[in-house]
Length: 205
Image (tube, rainbow, N blue to C red; front, side, top):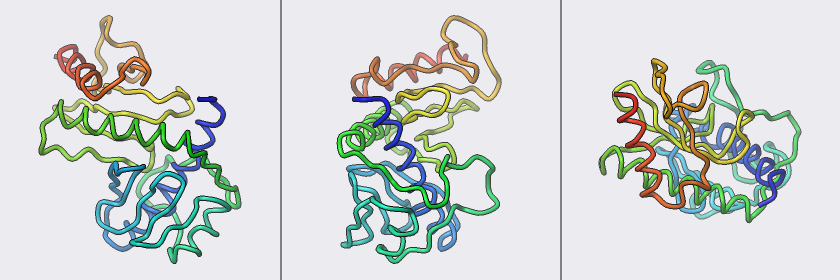
């Protein structure tokens, strides 16, 4: 997968998650939490989801093409980020056009699905991993350590899994400023993702 295509798609989906899923849900339901869903991601308390290259509202599908405002109008949504909750937002300019490549969207959806399964295997079947719209990562917290998967960000463009203790640790496991990360290519299935988190829990003590 071409990195530029993957990054463009990830940036677009991050903006969609904030403006068209989390923002409307927060204004209506009071929560910004999102979840992994077949083909992409979805609101936890609403009918809006991303499936591949489409925004789906109930039975209505709208291609993720054009601007956020145009997609929102076609879907009957009031676009906008959740206001007053956090400072980090998607790197997105007003009027910028969405670029969602089908192949890249599939790669990112698969990574969220793999991460969701890995997090549940690691933390327990009753765990509900959350996609947080500010950083666009899927995560859980156990004993003051964050475990999650990211589709990539400005610091690491490729998808990766991470372990982020609230209090930084030292040792060979910890290879990032915030804790530890492993690229998605090193974690081919949910069992490998769960094993990385288990190793992180052991290293965190």
